[in-house]
Amino acid sequence: MTRFRSLVIQSLATLLIGSATLATNLQAQSDAITVRVPFRFTVDTTTIAPGTYQFSLPSSPFLLSVVNVKTGATKMFAVHPERQREIEQRGRLVFRDAGGDNVLNEIHFPGTRVFSEVIQRRRARTMEAKKPSTDDSNSVAQR
Figure (cartoon, helix red, strand yellow):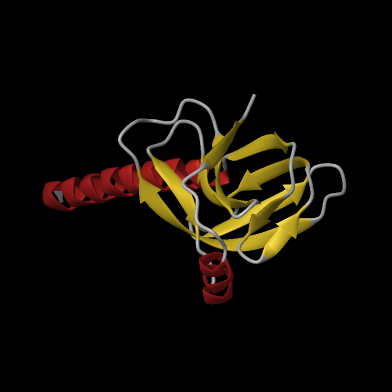
């Protein structure tokens, strides 16, 4: 009976630790940043007007939601998580200058070492390759 009791206690402890880890991961995924972007920008092949947007990973670390705060219009884009050395203190967006177009490249969420990189579809990469290349990039930070 004591052996069975010990096994039950170990199983419950393992379940609680696993649940805490899952809850932490879900909290990190539900974090969002709201940023005012003062210029037109492109995500994948979609052009987005200047405005205030909420960026989040609502259901998966591979799916980015971009919500226009004023209109509530939502767009979804494929992303993949990447690691960075430092924990991000504030949320920020990183744009790449592609021949005069501001292309959203990275979304950094605060309090984590992981950021999301936008997956550019083949058509977007082909169009970008035809434009003169520059190494310029812009960042917009959360307040």
